[in-house]
Image 1 (tube, one colour):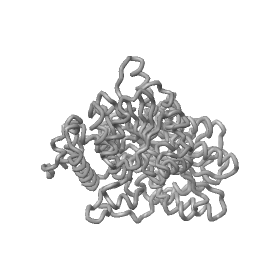
Image 2 (cartoon, helix red, strand yellow; image 1 turned 30 degrees about the vertical axis):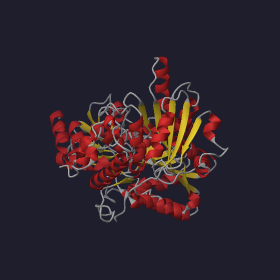
Image 3 (cartoon, one colour; image 1 turned 90 degrees about the horizontal axis):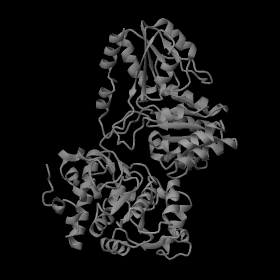
Image 4 (cartoon, one colour; image 1 turned 180 degrees about the vertical axis):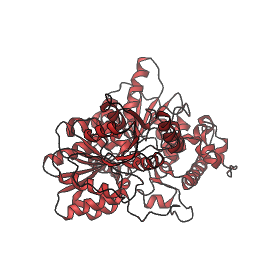
Length: 581
């Protein structure tokens, strides 16, 4: 039910309605948008700080420009809540019954005002430059703009995009939304450069954008609606590349988000009265706390470890660690390629890099995983979080990490089934010096079980609990699903330990003694663990059934639905096996 029936936003069906408003009305609209963002995020979770900070710029854009003919490419697009409200999708914030109607990122399937499904950083300038070049070739004249944050400027693709955007012969506007943050505080030389521009009101001679060839403009208060309208009017229809640098306040309008930007970049559901999360904090050991405990113990024991991440300290709960061990911590910014190459260089010089990556972001560093780390066979240790079938947006799926890492030479990809196993794997990975080792950080797994915890993974020897007729191989976190299947079928249960190193002797024995072998993996099937097993057993007299996710992009699809679609429920797997016997 829409409890905000008196809101001006109810009368905004699209940008044409924004153009009819006065400045005071638009300022009221900005307050309404902030209220709705805070209310929905409190109820459902979502990006908070980025959206609160971009409200005035979004209203000003739609007041001045003529979307969807004029095109705005959002970088990352996690700050598009205000844009969505102004382009016909306000009900998804006004009415809780419709909260699920829209995805959290720009989405062309939702609206003609969105041009790409975008959820990763640093892509907007390159995308917009390609659009501008196509526009020129086809003799058209619409305005094309990329909006990129200062945090996104730490990513390499942003520089590649700027390099080409600067020589675009006609209209192209790059808006740098400078709020002095990415997820965590920004790092590197970009920070220094932007600060000099802000401190000089855009007047410093040390202007990297002018040096590249951009016409440069600066807005000291990007949350001043009138200033943003004037700035956009000044760049509209200009026939050359312009960089418009705007200084905004991340979290504006919600004091807790202003005071603690990192904690409010993305929020889980919270209490509006006191800003406290609705879910109680887990006090039990987790896969991330176990990893940090191992790293700290190894540093304290004298190991020359560097914990490395690409602007996602919160994913691995690194905030306490980075203060406690500053000499052993590096945040490279939103730059996954840099993180992997940096880790490789650290390993070459004799250090022990422990690289902390999120599955969905790791795909951005595929070249370095292959060309720099694997081809040089250097002992980088990498923890991969979020590698699981999930209900995330199609831009944030964690189902590709196994295929990327497991199919490169020299990489060993380990998949723990318990926290005790994770600890042993990380301790071994840190001490071994022969190959790069990745560990799939498990989600909700037990601390331990009745298996003997192996301490040496230089040779993979499957752990087998004997049963009859059917063998169930459960990889990593799906070992628990494997246990349930095996119990139902009185089947053999196998912990394979690794996503890509096969225990051929064990597989030969399983094939000789069973009619059906089932593989279970929490990733896509194509190129995955199960297909490796099936390929090896192709000439054996045994049936192999592979279970995982099909090679499709899901988009905010409930996990239960994905499991059902891919025959990943206990009942479906058991029925399939019984049918095949």
